[in-house]
Image (tube, rainbow, N blue to C red; front, top):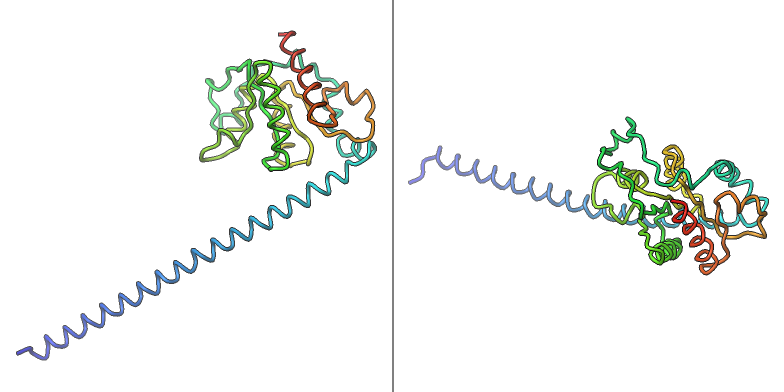
Length: 239
């Protein structure tokens, strides 16, 4: 026969077990709800980000729809290219600064790859065709092209971008879209004294002085292929 004390103990254990199970069930339910809420929120944020990015690029294209607007928007970039001698800067080794060290760049990363063109471009599908064209042009003359997200696996993508800029013989930057990441990376490439070629879609008959500043202004993929290939071949001959 079960004593009253044993019965009370059994009841208490049962109550504790049911309470623990209920608390655990509630916790797991809340955790699952939070997971789905977070997943939903991330999906919504991604949709909003994509929509914002699309609007930003559309407005930028309108801003640069005439020569006057193009010059106004790009005057700093034009000025930065005006005194550049890309033949002298191509293949120039980078100094291992504290900034580069803090980003994980090592002495081994400083070796210039003579065949490497590092492309600064928005990671957006609307600019993928331009990048593919640049890559095709490079391949035709024995050069390889990379952009930051192609070697990115995990961790800080900036390290991979910096490593690409450091090792590159030439940096090609697609400035269409005025993408903040591209402009920041372009500033880093200038600070490293890299030889840089800028690319931009044509607006109404830009003057010769802009075209002479290592800014390739092109009308379509065929025009880009002719102009960029010519520029890259000049560099290969000069080395």
